[in-house]
Amino acid sequence: MHFIENRKQELIVLILLVFISGAIAKVPFLFNIDPELFYPRNIGTIVFPTLITYLSLRYKFNLYRWLIYLVISFITIIFLNLIPGGDNSDTFFLSSTHSLFFLLSICGLAFVGGISGNNYKRIDFLHYCGDLIIMSGLLFISGGLFTAITIGLFQLIGFNIEDFYFENVVVWGLPSIPLIASYLIFNNKDLVSKISPIIAKIFTPFVFLILSIFSFAIIFSDKNILVDRELLLMFNIIIIAVLSLILFSLSHINNSNKFQFILLFSLSIISIIDNLIVLFAISSRLFEFGITPNRLVLTGLNLVASFHLVIISKQLLLLILKKANTNNILNSIVRYLPIYVIWTATVVFLFPIIFNFK
Image (cartoon, rainbow, N blue to C red):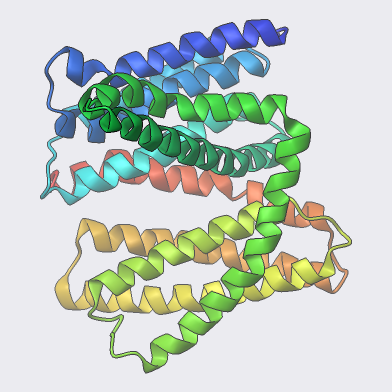
């Protein structure tokens, strides 16, 4: 059944969930807890339980499933708060960052209506994720401008409200961004659905051009990816960003857009090449310096991404040759998504134990 029947009910639910997220974010200030200790472990606590609840209420609400999603979320959050962590703990950093993607996958279950949700709903969830990033970014920028203007105006008349504003406005506003962005996405589909594909089409050729030049220029650079840790990390960030762009772009394409197919195929190929370079560099570091949590995570992530890019590239080539259609590509995307979930869950729950919380 649909718990939310009309716009008024949805607004009431939204306001309540925004209040809950803000109240959780306010905990360090209310109970004198060190924010640097609280927030790294509880970003997921602030954002995802309320977002999961909103999606569950909006799409075929099932009390049993909703409780399961919340239980999984709170187990993850409790685990993060129990494991030892600090500035020197690689496993804590990896576990806390990957937990956000794991909790996002729980949101996906709420969105599609469970593990058995059909492939079209899963594609819709990819659309939603892309739209959520764009809309949240716009809200964040707008909020930042409003904050700067507000603080600046009061400074002009001799009042310093910066601390008060951040503790009582920003701490409530930031957690509300994903919820408000989701509300805008669902209730302004005609507007949002046009913005995201346009942005994807604009950025794809530029990303391909920049990545091609970057991959060629690195050959002549003094930097050595085999020994330069920062360059290796940046390479990985670029590859993951490009993979995300490919997945998002493919979820919006149609059968008639052959140029876009060729562009995405070329981008996939150069991403695979860069992935292989990174894998070789990480493998060299593994053999030379031994296994560490960071190196193992990078290796696993690059292997998972490489296999997916190969599958996508194959389907794109078949599509260009008119031996497949967009449904084949979309299926190749959504069928692989559980692999990412399994990998993130492994990093979140097993890596701290395997490496003795180091």
